[in-house]
Length: 533
Image 1: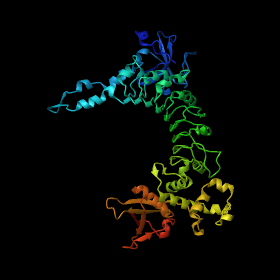
Image 2: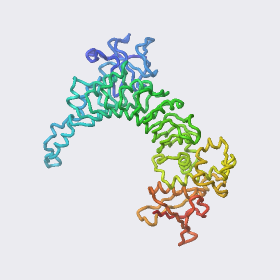
Image 3: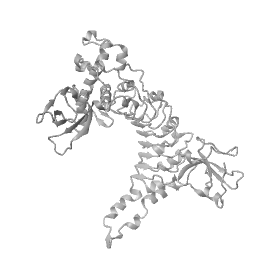
Image 4: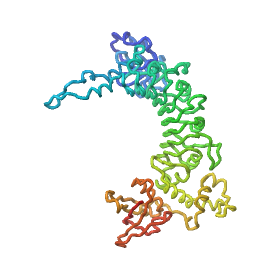
């Protein structure tokens, strides 16, 4: 690896005395200084840096067999001259550059628009809101902020800040962040995404600087879970913690920290899935984002099939999209969560095993309290249809496993109960399916089994006809579920009829939700008329 010689005049004066560990930018990329000094056989002083983006680097901190510093990534390091770098600006300089540039001159000025001169009447009130002392929300993203600046100036100049975004800056430690936030006594929301923050030996000594903090975002900060737990004592009132795209793998149990947490985002981390139960003691946690974490298994071993678990007692919203879930056992486990009402699980292999409508209905039937699935409301009519269809779909398996309409003889096997933990509750709710409803469903993936039908709303002229290709074996309840979402009809009662070119002028009522389209002799090209009340 060759180091290019460059002029070094004035280099020494450009490098801070405490440069090692400091953050800088070079040619638009952020890095952390790991070494300051000579790199023989070249002359002059160099900065050895570890890039945030390892693809920007060339080596691991070694040169011609000599190690000058270490990097987490084998190609994350480089040597650069100081004159190519910037160590950033202080907080207040960034605030004034971002918010006050040109405002003083604009107040009361006249401007020329086309050929007319117009006085900026009323602009003063806008300018007044923009003055830094009045700001409640301060956004300094990518402003090269590296420190607080002169003592107490932040407190005097931006005393009303409630929300502060310092993402993509040059902050190098939690001590530096605390020097800024301790002067913002009303601060409740702090975003520090894309920074690299070193931790002092006693983080709890900085609690005073984050005493009112409720929301903290540390996305893409290269932090581990042990580091999060180490720092957590600094945030005694934290309620929402965003940790997406970090180096979090194995989770450990939070002890005496994070107990007030309501929202936790762990998305885009390569989690050790067996360690998920370690955070189940977060008794106030309501929203958990586990998207893109590589999860394929979730298991609450303490609770039996069909029972509720004491783990995650307050969890209402769970995001699991873009994972590796392939088994319905995972969905059965989610029904053990006593408060779960909202689930996102798109882009998992499990979702591709059957058509979209069937998969959605199976999810609804397996999770008893679900109110919203993949951002779409689960209506009462849809739940009823999904549960009835579930009973019919697995009725034969239930009978073969020892199930019976007579409650005294209804003793399905443990294996069936484990695979379908809600089945007994559903037949108690609706009754056992009739024999003629237990016919084997034929697959309908082939194109020649699809019907092209047109949905029309005769009582709403503003709605355009919708053409869809549907399998003839699709039951009416599923068709209605599709229409609820297509037409956005929450809470409405849908009534269907259809017309055929073979029976001009006649409407045929579709009145049994559990019958397939082919039961009504609906054919390719027919029109289904949709009314609701």
